[in-house]
Every structure is written in structure tokens, then in C-alpha cells.
Figure: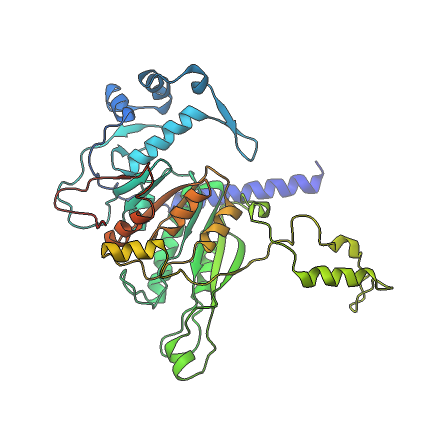
Amino acid sequence: MKSSEATAARARARRVEKGIQTEDRARAFTPRPSLQGLLQLPLLEELESHGGRAKPSDLYETLADRLDVPDDLRSQKRSCGDGQTYSVFPQAVRWARQNAVMAGLIHKGERGIWELADPGYAKLKKVRRGVAVLIYSLDDGVALWAHAEDAARAIEPGSLGLVFTSPPYPTVSREYGRFSVPDWLSWMRSLLAAWKSLLATDGTICLNLMDTFVSGTPNLSPYVERLTLSCIDELGLHLSGRSVWHSPTKMGNIQWASKTRLRPRNTLEHLLFFSKSPNPNWDTRRLPAEPYAASTVAAWDRAQKRPSSKRPCGYNINERAFAPTGDGPLPGNLIVAAGAPGNDQFSRRCREAGLPPHPARFPEAIPKRVILLTTEPGQIVYDPMAGSNTTGKVALDLGRRFIASEPSLTYLGASALRFDQRPDFRRHPLPEGLAVPTA
């Protein structure tokens, strides 16, 4: 390795180590989530037989014996996209343990030790700080009734390939409340610090944000820019990219676009991508190929007939390098998609059940593009403010796993209508005195 390359590698290693140390100093520990109740899981039974506390390595073989797992499955290994290998059965056990943690059955506890937890509150009347309740699950997904802060404490650090969410915007009133810009920035900084610790080394955080106006004026708040700089300067995240979502059906601001006509209708929303490392697990080849436009093909054909390939800018271009062949044009960062439909199957089922659908849903095209770009099949996608859980539905469709959390039991109960006709759907009982809204 050349001297300059070695120096650059050492500098990158120092920056990574500095980021780890900074995050370790900043991370605050708070009480563990409350528990929902005891489920009959072989893992829990095996933990109990070990005295309620054991190392994972002590459980794999005994649990395999309990379940009569064949020898070939016990030793089976698979390869990840980065070339690393993992053992299939131990990974399945770890996923079962994570589900149990989120159900409140196993303490998150210290790293390397799994410990059974005490029973949860019997008469929980509402989701409170420090509480996470499992509402429904599938073989490859779980949905928690919890605030984002509490759900994060139930997720294994380093386990997520993607955190993707659309948080409530500052100064915009929702059921979740209304934030001032300073309060919103403080809240989001603390959440992003927690989410960073949950990411795999090559994982990504993606936020869908919308411009808002400074109160009483037609001027835009720079809160998006302030958050971006805070993520970079204070949290040590990398700004990996930006995309823009253009929604042709988006309504304009009533005061400034409709009444006074001082500002044009804003049809754009931001997608900000932050990563834990400078080289996240992105691959644009996972995105669906698009055909070349007819005008592109016609322009290239005309270019072949020009006597000179010298452009007006002075550059002499090799036109053959731009031939419209292969899988289509390189993907851009503009997403054009109308807002979520109001008469799709989910909306109709909500109306039939008398449940209010979440009022700020995005179309499936948004999470689909983000998930394909930033994750591989089998990785975990987490939406901490899941709403109607569009993200979880798309993640399953694309062969990923999902974790969803949502503080509104009404919206989370309605989101189950996306999954309740699947054979692996399981609705979990609530503590006495509560009922999940259902069809």
C-alpha cells in the first residue's frame, strides 16, 4: 500500500473510533421497557432451565436438542453480500430473542447475557414512557405500541440495516402534538443518537421531511438544514445523499399559496440519507430498471450523424459512451409519485372497520425505493413512527424484515389490516382492561 493510502486508511480508522467513543459518552441509559406477559417460547423454557440467565453460546446446542434440529441445519452457513458468513440456526435464535425482548419477555440487559424478565403491568391503560407492548407479529415482522425512545431500547444494537421514518414536522399540528422548531430539533437529535447505535456498521437512516414556514411569515424555516448540520457535526453521521419526492397532487399552503398568492405551491418533500460509516450498503443496481426515453434514443441516433463530436462547451465527447444500451439510464434522485390513495384496499378496510386511517401516509413508491437502494433481502428495516405501517408492508413485499413502533394504538391497530389476512399474522393479547381496535 502506498504511503498516502496508508495514511488515509489510518485517518479513516481514527475518525471511526472517535465517532464510536463520542457516541458511547453521549448514550444515556434509562429504565427498561415494561413487559407484556409471558409467551410460550422454547427459548424462554430453555433460559428458565439455565436458571433464567445464560450466555447465547450456552443455549444454541441445548435449544437445538430441545427442538430436534437436524445436524445439517445446525452447521449450515450462509454468505452476506459483503462476503462474510454466518450460521443460520444461531441467527434464527438471535432473531427469536430480539422478538422476545420487544415483547418484554427477555431483558435487553448487558451485552452477551440473556436474562428472563418479570411479568409486565397487568392494568396498563395507556402507552407510557418506558413501556413497549407487542401488538402483532409475523414471521418476519413485529409491531410495537411504544414511543420511539422506548422502542429503541428494546432493539439489539447494531442489528438494523435501515431506519426509515417520516416524523411529525415542527409547527404542524398532529395527534402527536405540536412542536416548536427548537423543541423538535432537540427531540430529533436525541432520537437520531439512539438510532445510530441500532444501525449495522453499513446501515442507513433516512428521514422524510417537508418544508414549513416561519410562523406568521411566507419564509421557509431552515430546520431541515439545521438538523442536517447537527447530524454531521454533533452526532458524527455522514450525509450519504439526498432525494426529492415530487408529489403532483400535493396541496399548497392555504395562507401563502392560496389566499395571498405570495408563494408557489410546494410539491416537494425531502429524503435525507445519513449513514454510520462513509460507505453504507447501497447499490443502485437493486433499483428497478427504467427504459430509455424515446427522445434519448432519437438524440443519440442524431449524434451519430454529426460530423464532429465537439460540444459547444469545448469538450470532445465520445458519443459511443452514451449509447442507450444495457439496463436503462442511471437512476436519478428524483422520485415522482402522487400521495397515498384514499380508495385503496387498506383505506376501504379501515372504513369498513370504522377505524381512522393515518392522515399523513406516503405512497408505497417512497419506501420501496429507499429500501431497495439501502438494504439487501433479509435485513431489518425499522420505522419508529410507523403510522399505518406502509414501510413494514413494503419491506415484507421486498423480502426484508421489519420492526414498527407507533405511540397511537388506534393507528397501530388499523395498520394490522395490512397483514391480518396473512397466515403468519399473530395478534398478541393486551393487559387486562385494554383492547386493540380491530375490524
